[in-house]
Structure formats: structure tokens, C-alpha cells
Image (tube, rainbow, N blue to C red; front, side, top):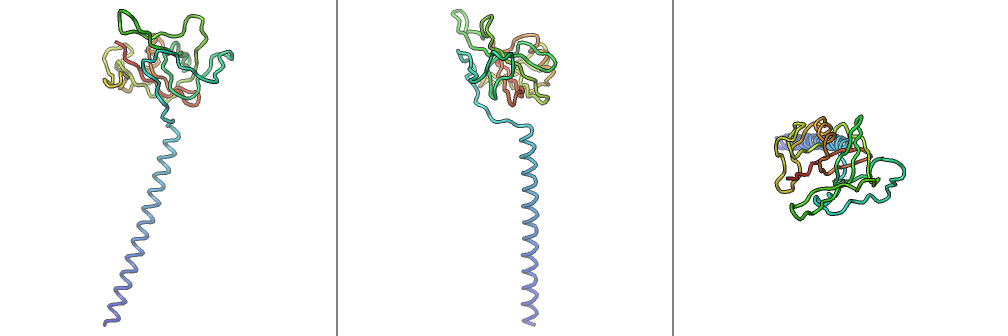
Length: 190
């Protein structure tokens, strides 16, 4: 009887260990698969966290290595403090801006002087992230701004981005990745 009990216990312990290792292996495989899927999905739609420029910077941002003599084309990867000057067939033209202090007001944004060739053109990504500081209507109707940063916080459709920014120059942080505009975050200006 003693031998039978030991055999049953040993068999039960072995079965439990086998079952536990099988469950652990299945869980590890499922976790690895989920991680790989999430990583692949993120890689397809994500871009690096580029360093944001000073929102109210008083000089134009440089784009080292950009040759403006070769016609208007995309800026290098990164975030530009700028505004969109024209949108045609899904391609946005944009230029850098800087904050100009004023004696009578806090200041205002200005673009390059007339005749300056500092401008870029990039297609707007189909899944562009547009964060508005003024709501999602084509006309700026509401304030939807992060009070800590002064940047737009309301996600709106790309159609609003195109309608609003094609009609007026709205200061924004424009993120370019692999030649496309992937994010536009408006800067609130009173």
C-alpha cells in the first residue's frame, strides 16, 4: 500500500509539473506573439519622439543639409514650428515661423521675409494626427487647448486640418517623418 501511494503521489506530482510547464510555455508563446504583433503594429504607424522646439522661439529653425535651390520639397524628420501656407492634392506647403516681440502686445508669429525661399512641401499622411487648439469646426469656434503648454489638445479629422489651414496661416508644430506630415498640433495665440 505504501508503494502504491508513493507511486500515485509521484505520478500526480509529475503530471502537475508537466501541466504547469505546458501552461507556462503556452503563456510565454501567447505573450511573445502579442508583443510581436503590437511591435509590428506600432512600427507601421509610429515614429520616434522628436524633440519639440521652443513654442515661442524667436529665431527660425534650421534644417541642416536641406538644399533650397533644388525646388520645394520635404523637410528632414523632426518637428518644425511653422504654418501651412497652401494645400493642394493632399500636399501641404509650409514654412518656419518665429515669435516676434511687440511693444504694444505680447507679440505675434512671423514667417520668412517676402522673397525668401525657405519653404517646404510634404504630403499629408492619411493617418495624420491633427490636434486643434480651436475645436473641430472649420471655423475656429471653441478653445480646446492644453493650458499648461498652449498647444492644441482636441483630436480632429484631417479634413478639418486641410480646410482650416488652407484658408489661413495657423501657427503649429508640424511633425515630418519619412517625407510626410504625420502630426500637426496648433499653437494657441490670443
